[in-house]
Image 1 (spheres, rainbow, N blue to C red):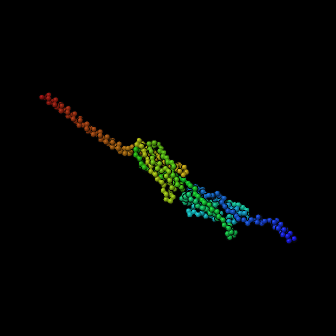
Image 2 (tube, one colour):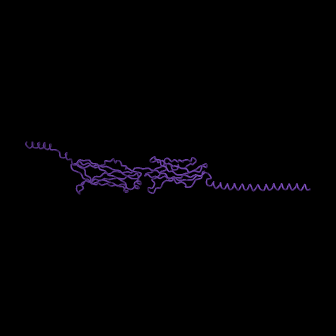
Image 3 (cartoon, rainbow, N blue to C red):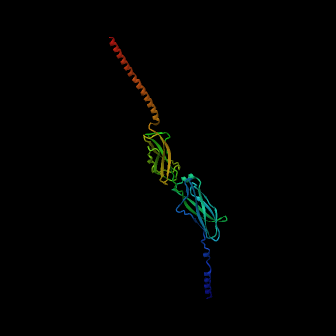
Length: 319
């Protein structure tokens, strides 16, 4: 009987003892994760004027333990281009029962590499946190994210035009070059030509450049796309210098960019007309001389006729 009472008393005593597991959970692992929203991928901040990537990613560490947590941080990328350099604290400490956020600053170093990296692809960043105690490594955790370079569009027109004067009533060919200084395929959805102060000058043939895909110029040896157009002054066009503006609207960013050039027009006959005028003038002058010369025989004939008549009358009187 006493034995049974002792067992019951012992059971009650054990049930009253606080559960050490509840107060000090075995699952007191530290947590490590992204503070920045990187799902499904993270698009980096880009300065397209400098072709520079500059951004910051944030991660957190939660320490549920009763003691401080010391971690060693490392960052690596899987890109062969070494597109980014990372700046961060390699050694961090998280106090007991603290949730703390840390940052990794990202900066590109080579503008050509940035522009040459296709926005269609991505590369990953991996951050590894290793728990240390003295020189010993106790546990390791890592987080990863896919990074992308944003699309940037910059369709810039250039023109190769004659450096000599164009005669009115004729036409010459010129070339429009479309330079894609962005990082993804672009096209011209609108092209307009504006001629200042020369209503009799036409620019034709620009439609051939519409909606033609232009790959990024200078990337992997890609050249600008070139298109032929015509400069056509009418035959009534006076001698004048005309300012021409060709404006191209990008399909990618809907921005309009322009190229401006001057065209020298000479009126029909222009410089040739000066020499022709001289020739005509010379011809005309020669014609006058010929008319005077041809008039001399007429005067001579009349004089001779009169003299012959007078001589005949004189003879008849004598007879």
